[in-house]
Image 1: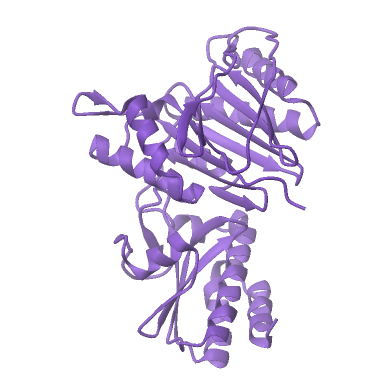
Image 2: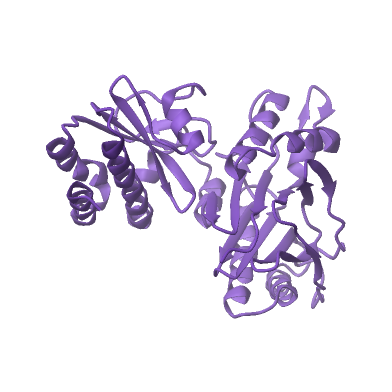
Length: 376
């Protein structure tokens, strides 16, 4: 690693949490002659790139910033360079630098610095609101604030899988959510189709998510995870409130998928260009009855399979007195084959917004998972 990159990393470690971008300006100016530095973060809707300081947001899909974000590679145009700010597959935005010479080695070093910035922003975000506040184009509702803070991230990449998810309406989502975790051998993924309105819906989803995490971290199997969450919800609401969830566990060595369908969102499989709905054993939603037993079912994934999980807010989205529907969904999912999971999710949400001519009214969650096969 070059000395300027090491200096930038040290500067990021030593700079106060709210001033990370300013912390690398001296290194960039001294080592590369760069005088303009700006971080653009992608907003909650995945629709705008917003500057951390003053400046205009970037919305045009053909803009170099979006091309760098979409293709996840540096882009140099007329002395201005755009670098993906990404950590372990979590795309946070792009770093804009100028002037930058057309030098492959310099571009590679600056790309390393942009990645280091992504890691630092992730590390400090729990202790400062600077980066979260700059990512929004409007105020989040209280329920949406709770839901976004509950998420593990929006995208994740490991050699054996790629994963992405999105909540809509981004600034006013209530009860729909997702969660994931992996340990290198297994991936756990849960998707919740929430019920209710406002903060009450968010509280119900938060209880279910934390109950599932508690059971998962205790080493319980998928069926027992569902049973524990079911009991936690029933103990508090006595059956008056419940929610649908789909729990999945993927063995990253074999591709065997274990599933518990608790009144779940829809699970769709995209394999070799064909879309099929995976048949699941329907079981009671979480919290509907006391002491429900949940049964696991298994099915194998093949290398290159793509799995979509969508809540009913997707297929029931309405525009001009018509539902989006399963036929339109299947047709669109088939077209996402060449896209990365986050791009596929973003494209589907964009198609829904175009269909309803604005933001969705009802909650919707979309999760996309690619299994690329066992790795050495």
